Image (cartoon, rainbow, N blue to C red):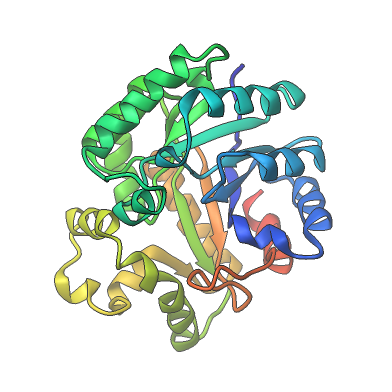
Length: 292
């Protein structure tokens, strides 16, 4: 069954849903009309997406992503089928090879990650309960990964990118596959405060070679990438300002070829390094009025 994510969704880290108001928050998000909820660093047991789908009645829940080094393909396929059968057309399985540090955390050696990801897709296809290609997307950044997403899944879910990258990805993928980039946003009009908050979030990602190489491919220099990032890098990766300014950045992605934009709100409540945070309900309400 084809999964329709709509034009705009919300991306959150998985740990945001440990908050006491998690059920009320996801119910409200569903009512606001966003097309999909993306769950960053999703556990392969798929308990959280199942719980959030059970609490809602309309929107899609997508994993963004399940790390393929963390699980067995046949076991994941069986779990996927249980969740998808309970919520037809509302569950999208996002997959990716992650980073060397995450593979190591699962006791695996991070070698030939793209080949490993392709073999994992073979396992999903060969499982007793296969995962249809139309029900999965890949975390893809570079051309070979985008080609794999084009031929072996519904499309690509690139993370930490700009509208210019989205244009490149659409040209690489062609017109058919789903292109659903993530976009970080901060509802703050003071440049110093917005950039300081953005740097607290981005510093972690600038330690990961996969993202650094992709940013270099996008034209950013060593001076942009040192420390927690230059103003040029921050302003390119994080849309900050008024609701209207943020809506303008989302529109740039759509104009560049995105089918769907997964908006991640960065706020004082969220800390990537300490894995703490809560649903950004106030910001979601404000964004819904401009984006939907």
